[in-house]
Length: 571
Image (cartoon, rainbow, N blue to C red; front, side, top):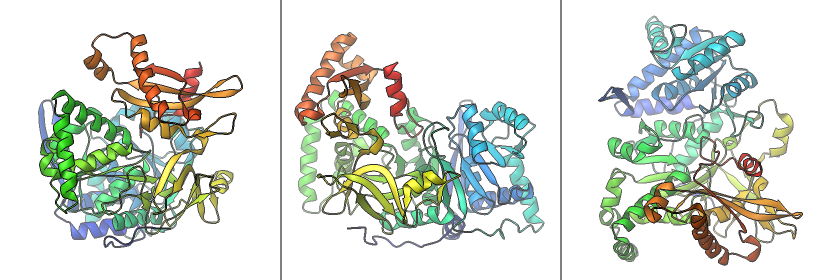
């Protein structure tokens, strides 16, 4: 099986503390973070150097230990911000175990997660103050409640207060944080998988698991200490937090997104050069670019420029970033590298960004794998694939069918310790050192991995034919008015009818057709679905269509919650 050769030099460590110490030694004056401050209409920025970040997380860690939280479990909940990142790094580098929680959880699921993970303390954003007061009254096992914000309820300690306290302790010679023994193979983080609390599993990751992923990604991808990363993925998500650690380890400047609507503005504002995102975002950006090109009547010009660019590339001449400067300037002008994960990206979108001079690589992994298993890079790109296994990762296909499709199975130093207090579930997925992902895919002759779908999502027809919904969704999502789609099997006459639910873009439809009835719109969409059907084998034809402008139920990483959606459709 082909794997990455060592493309770049990288230093290997077993703990996050070692990576942070190295970054602070190599990049003391680089900005680790740029923080936007808003006071009414006034906006200012605070630059936090790696030296300042180092001082802050060591002071916070010292104060947390002084509160009796050494080797304890500390939950973090809130939106992406400096205090979230600071708390996460501080705990990992010398306090105890982090328990990142999804900020979108309702109160009863927050309570359930805290109880399941046996949490000793919670660090939270001020909007959770009332929730935390309720928990404080009813859960005596949680000893400390710490607010990220200085304007929080007076009954709670704050991060700022603890940093001040920690600085005083350090000044007086307190070395407990610095002397804390970190077991590389011990539990470092407890992370809940996507889904409702009753369905989710608590994944146990070690310092070595996470550190190995940082090392392997650095062997495969080129990251510069001059890069600016837009922290878009939620930090409670494994690639959100591990990605942040990766960029911090490499001296990158990190900034925070003001929200989905403000991404384009933030790309320009901070001169962002790299970011990690989900395919839905990239696909939306790509459609927006092409809609604008079409609106200006420049489609033919764009295609001509592309053909010239491709021709010159064959002779080693790369003019992409000059030819498509206007498009790149609309994305801030500095974007060079985008990593897409969580689900498959349309290969036309990946190729489209590449044509503009932006390397948009597909990666693949799971919470249980810390998270990255495979990825493309500038030397190894195959549109539609999720790349090659990282250097220390092995991938094989279990029980492949006649097309070579089977369950993706992985082995490597990044594989989780197991599920917390779920021994039977752990045994189901960890066998002889191999992790059974539950994803279906195949390896091509060059060793590139292609994901075809989730085992649990496969539509099995009465005639025994298997249909992978994700494969057809990529085709449907290519339609310019489709915001998102879900292909599923609808029961009928002891069999399944292949169906699709399409969420259309209201703004696009309004601009394209002005006033149109839903029935007429459905007829237009049906014509496009029939064209898609004509390109597929008959057993894969979509025979039932549902359209809506209401977004689907999704996780915070924008994955559609299929079973909840199907339940909603069946009601």
